[in-house]
Length: 412
Ligand SMILES: Cc1cc2nc3c(=O)[nH]c(=O)nc-3n(C[C@H](O)[C@H](O)[C@H](O)COP(=O)(O)O)c2cc1C
Image (cartoon, rainbow, N blue to C red; front, side):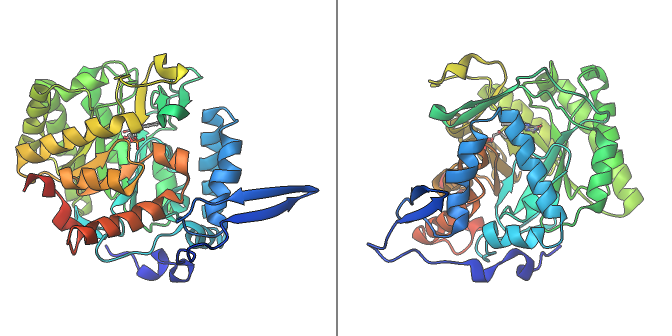
């Protein structure tokens, strides 16, 4: 599947950095008030660069985090859904596709290596909107077979000093059938992965039934599938990552994928998302089982239960920690998987990516693609352009002609 460059690349929106010494401050009149906005030197110009940091973020950060979240997803769903809405978003935040950063993997074409991680668009409400703001792919979900409300609120916390979030959402979602209905109608510009989980009330012994039901309902609509067994917010879920339980689960899930492949005549990839809180022995065991089960790739990692190095008063909240404090640990996990498999198991890196350097560290450690969540909340959609431009510079600096040459470079 190729995504046409004309849709993805608003070439006329490319801008160059201002000449040195150029005015970096803009003055706006708000009624009688003068508002002076100072831009960080070196960042690109335009309304889009002021909109999030100076207007949207201060508003969102005054609100309850979950309300702000719904506003973002709802806003993108509405904008992406009206005529001209997606084009406007692409004009503002689209990222030019560049051959050195485009990735072909899992039989799919990824126009950029940076995707949207699972959990933001849990119900696939804003696929068109998220597809238009510079991501190279996105995950929807985690979805469970039956709708469920998730944990009691409040269940999402910001830790700005730590550039982190703690969440204990608990797979709040509208269920697989509702997601299928939405994905059926959504226009695709980038690969969309469906991230699947089990309902809270389903015991681990029957978990395979839940994963299989999600695959049955959603197989025609996902470009690839992610088995989530690493959320800390569904009691007992993470024990599915180990030993016989994992082997049995994956055998069932693999069987369902093959049944659906035969039925539809379309081969789709299966990935597993793992936690960062694993000992080296546990990780080695998991990777061995994943390879034996012939899964197509791994997402490393989900949020952590560690609270190391946090300073914010919300540090004591229960749940999964994402953002900056997770960056190092998730990169270590990527590195270990790459080493163990000799680079034969494709890895999607997730955890604490804010800058191109963070993304590049994960790529050099062994990730073929990366994805972000928390950085989008703190930096806004402009983050995709920065990551893209920074990655191109880093590749050139190291003499790589294509991103695939940098994958696992630290091991050579
Ligand atoms: C509020 C919130 C909800 C999340 N929900 C899910 C989810 O439903 N399924 C999942 O696999 N990961 C979920 N995640 C984890 C992210 O997909 C991602 O792996 C993790 O946040 C690390 O990336 P980051 O540091 O860039 O945020 C969630 C993260 C956050 C912050």
